[in-house]
Length: 248
Image (cartoon, rainbow, N blue to C red; front, side, top):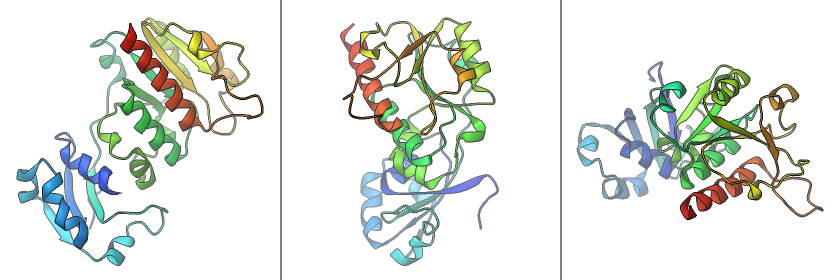
């Protein structure tokens, strides 16, 4: 029986990183024979495991947690609670030279999870996403993020445009990524506070949202290729900006 505030995540990295995260409440974990052999060796929170409810299941029993989601559990399933929500206005008071990624109408859990994984890998400071489009308890998103949900600040907002307006008024530059832009993002000096704005998988940025951008930029790719998947695009951008910051 689940708590009303809890949900299930699956996959080795998703579960292990949740166990490592002292801010994440893990209620139960479910393991099969193979993962049972490894869990005590790879989890650093050994004291937690002593008090945690651990259930041992067959692989077929664990399959029931994934049957509707199209993900594989790798022998690891956990019931967890949501992390405390992050406050964007408070966060920007504590740091300088911030780089946020902002997702406008992006809704596919696999893409969001992959993007979060890239953002965490290349030191992006946070992801801004409309709360209505954020699949906060998606097994697919957690599995695609490969544990990086525990290392990335997610800022759920009620209105993207209002948020962009607020950030512009607080010394942020807003860069909208569009395939038809004439400006290459690699020509930008990535200094100060920036928002990297990505549109939806199928339709790009909404026209109304473009009004809140300062610059339009693109990833320069082969002219024979129409576009890149959003998670691939984001990974390229995040890596470049991380390299740029490390050199300056």
